[in-house]
Image 1: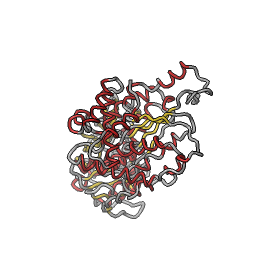
Image 2: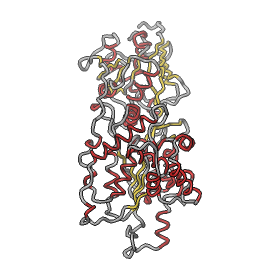
Image 3: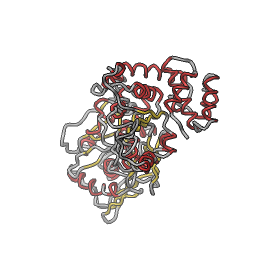
Image 4: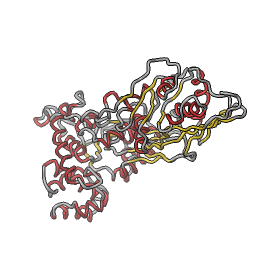
Length: 521
């Protein structure tokens, strides 16, 4: 390139992520006459801004140094905050095309994702799965990703993916004769994800309901919770099986449908915990944060773009809070919105990030701080004030959102009814049949489970039989239930009917649902 030459401008693609939502970013580069300078604009964060040093060193490492001119790179749209090192490759390719090393036409319609090392190696970045899903939705059909993200990238159908180990391979792929550190990679053809597993109960062979001794009502409540997507609270003294039951609920949930599998896999991709070797995540997750966990770790948060928390990692699965009254009240109160809406919205100064968070909440609690206030409570050392304040740590509005609240008392292993329980595989088959009934009933609706039926629609189109509806109305008028409690009892009654193959809830179903609900006021 002669000293008097004015270089061309060029552009290529990248993707900016805000949660699991991606935005196609146009990386524009201009290389012009003037004193050597490298400007990066378009609202980059500090990590993205450091791409200037990484790109300059990487280009020099493969023998194609950046031109000693005034280089300007714009990340458009400029009003969206750009976060992370995943823009490195797109910036490098756009500059090399602008200075004539690459053909601008060859890179214009390609999305480039990846972080560059100073030796030009291409390193994997989080969020490739949601990024390529967003790129596909924007009409992009070709993408270049690091080798470490290749398996994850090829889960996205409809995009031709090329994986590379370093910047030199990317340049060769686009027609430039650049030095190679490793053999060139072939284009990966997308493959279909594996079929859902047939037996939901066999996915966690180490955790089987057959191990639970007695506790028929609690096991029944766990089955109902899994069948209809309901929230559950287990209360009782230590050692009665609360944690055993809760930890086995995800094992009786059906394999995830495509929509939930993609959402959960995208969340795990952002969290750097996604193993793409087995395809999309089809197993319902189980998250159990410790009671000392902070609000950002459970709900999500952090500086810049907020990261997903336990409520999002438990999407389409179970969020278990053991020793629930010991959790910080801020954590418990922050659960109100996702319990109602099925997602969580995190506001920061520069962005608003939304994550899916449709989980089943399972709480376990002792009756008092020492745990011995059960039955006659003769061994309990807590004062009446301590017992009241302990249970009040879970506020009324949170408890009101729990569909079932079940007492789990001590079990005598010598009793005849305390023998071996049903296996998870047997329970999972009943849960699957109940969910199939719901899928057929809600085929034309935007919801899929009984727990998701909107209140007005529930009372209008999904009422119980007349006598059962009258029973519910009496409980509401006598102050046993709030209006929200009325709706939640009716949803549980529908699930009980589905488990028994009934067309509509009757008095038996509503009566059991009321028993499982307990008293609201």
